Image (cartoon, rainbow, N blue to C red):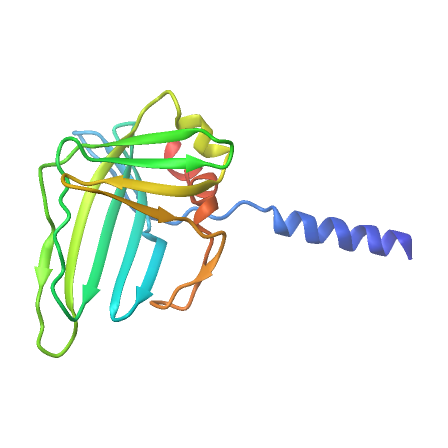
Length: 189
């Protein structure tokens, strides 16, 4: 009986701590170099009083430069204020171990695209590419992210990370705190 209980305990622990499979969306190698990108992952979702914000991440490797592709979709029946990315924009990730990882914006200035539709809420879609610095990149592999701050061109917005949530968009369960622990390995090699 003890052996059965021990075997069951080990099986449960192994499956609970098993690594997530890599879901690669793009993997291109040509004469210019290599580019690899993971599928998009919902990292943040908020819906309140007819307004909603969804943030998606995908990790990328462009000729061994590791990056984070970020897409922010905001919906509202009213006016949606534009937040813009410029060369001073940053993403700050606060880790469970107390350290802060800074990602630098590397694109052109953008305020996203406003989509208006009479039959559904207005939407603003903004995408941006950020790169990791070498100093603190290793901390993301071992420590959970608890908080994100995005510095736009005119303001800074805070986004607390949840341990786990079920998305209203696709009804799947996501664990944003473990995103980098689970998926950085997918683009490193």
